[in-house]
Image 1 (cartoon, rainbow, N blue to C red):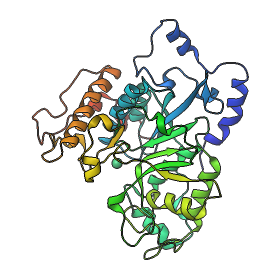
Image 2: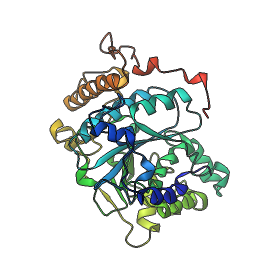
Image 3: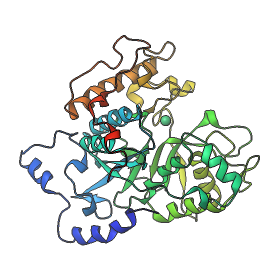
Image 4: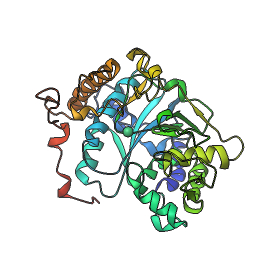
Length: 373
Ligand SMILES: [Mn+2]
């Protein structure tokens, strides 16, 4: 397992004991020297992340907003826009915000460089486990084929390993942050989530954890427990994880079912999860209660039912909130273009049903260096 996070702790303690956690770029910024041209409220543009101690830097608790990229494509524009939206929201946050990208080994160096220009700390942690470590053949086969991206979906679990942060918010790249998430970032629970009510079924006693929005309290033991469940517990096609009936829904053999199974049946006492208001957080405009709110109430949103902004299907014919959220996404896209010092280009040049123009066209082609260093 090529996982570097474990080794970070010794270094963090050593350098924090030598003084503050700000690197030379932050010192320059403090003295009016300007930043790097990247997003302004993102710590990794100036912070030496391995100098964080216990998730605190200069008296502020540091929080990571993390994504996992498992393949190339328009998700990269999603990541750029999401980063710009986090930067804007963090202007008024009490927390020090950082960006982390977990990259699958198939993601090229061009994408990696672009993410770095946006302020992401890029990590290539490998996969949390390999397919042949999954003991039960039925479970192995289902994980290989299930959910968004098979085994790679489990990369989201690396959020639990980032102990240098106070909390880690793991988001899909088809989400957007509209306001600070501060109200969630001091919660005691191991996981805050939104329940995926639409994917739930009458067969399951427990709702799915929607995989696009996870607020995690880093804890390497929870990470190890989750990996062990995948390796050793069987997922029964008619009875779910360990026969618990949990996980009998779309994505249930992966993150969306593993997490509720763990917190309901396997977690030690005091290791808890809690669902938060799905009209405020990770709003998918999928239920009347989520459709009815004004955009000023929404702190983060997820383009599922609304369709992806890069499908150029806006304005949405039936859901005004989808149209408002897409407008915000396109505004943030303009900010991402300036952060990357790219000229503005129309995303959907001929309007509804346009062919989408990616902002990332000018990035170096990933084929130049397919596997990076
Ligand atoms: Mn998604």
